[in-house]
Image (cartoon, rainbow, N blue to C red; front, side, top):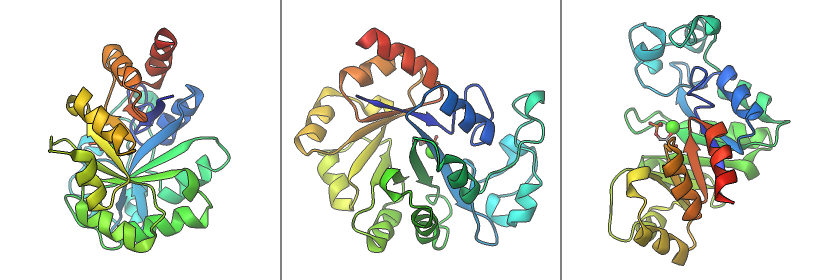
Length: 242
Ligand code: G3P
Ligand code: CA
């Protein structure tokens, strides 16, 4: 069965990458949660999508220019709705503590393709390992250098290569990079690629899929997982597919 992974939590209904959006994803029976990891100025892994803080905080600057304590003071809920005023950035550690007793898969995207955060891979991996969550954690990245660094840390890591570009024999190319799964933008989803991934036994995961027709297509192609802002719609769509 295609797994339904809540993209930045249930981010259509609650501010992305917050405890509220993760909690809602869990209540909506998502199979897992996708979130984005960056480092604060003082090297603490935190969950935030954009490199710039403006869109969800209305403040200036970049994540890596703020210490963890400074980031913790930012309000990342009010842009979305007044009921979310006071929602704060979560550290990766807070997120792991929240998820540890819940049967959710973890998809951690390492946001190192714009700024190459020093030791982002090792810091993230070590924390996940410390909480005993490696067996249900999937690391992903757009950065090929990051894939190499993850492989140096451990050869058993679940690593998905994120890509929006079409390529000849994408599954073989991804494997050569050191990834063991491909995370593709929806528009790359074509029968040929599905077949190649199947032949190479490489899981195919698709982002970001919110329309029922597109969700259904991912189910029909038996994709490994979809990333969606609307896990409830994906669940309902699954019922029509059965
Ligand atoms: O995991 C896929 C997806 O999250 C990648 O795109 O920009 O939403 O992080 P983005
Ligand atoms: Ca992401």
